[in-house]
Length: 206
Image (tube, rainbow, N blue to C red):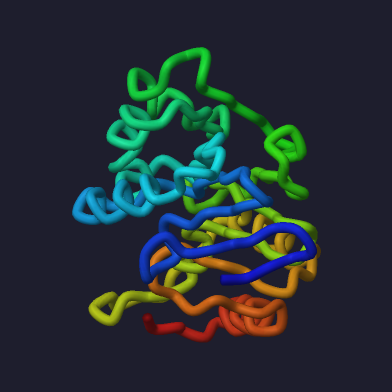
């Protein structure tokens, strides 16, 4: 659990996907996780009886981030936020009146949280990051694009768009950056070092 002055950031499971943001009795869910974890995720959400679950933010619409969207929406009446370029990917999964799309930035103050969602494309067209109280950033799968899998022969080659997005989130100088999945949570210094290692051509093995 991590806490700003008035907001909690917590894992739902033992990994960084999905995660929840909570301010007093208001809760936002970040991504929905893999299908194999669906029952555990639903069980956890059902325990939050006194919490006002209001919003799901999708960092992007790759299958492992949206596999439980339909199951969660069948049980909870919440809005879903996604970048405009990926809205069609969840068409038919979300009622039109509950779907919120954004372009560059979406302020979360109307959902009771001091933070915003920003477009950080590269991993996908609509990849987005969530910044809370200018201290913590939940950055989806951005960091995964740096790593070369053990079986791969070549270095990863990031697009200029990806590098620009990394610079955007580094410029924030947040205390911590939360990648999805099992990767370690990174301080500003650790993330900056990782990007610099990549830029000088180091092959970073996962």
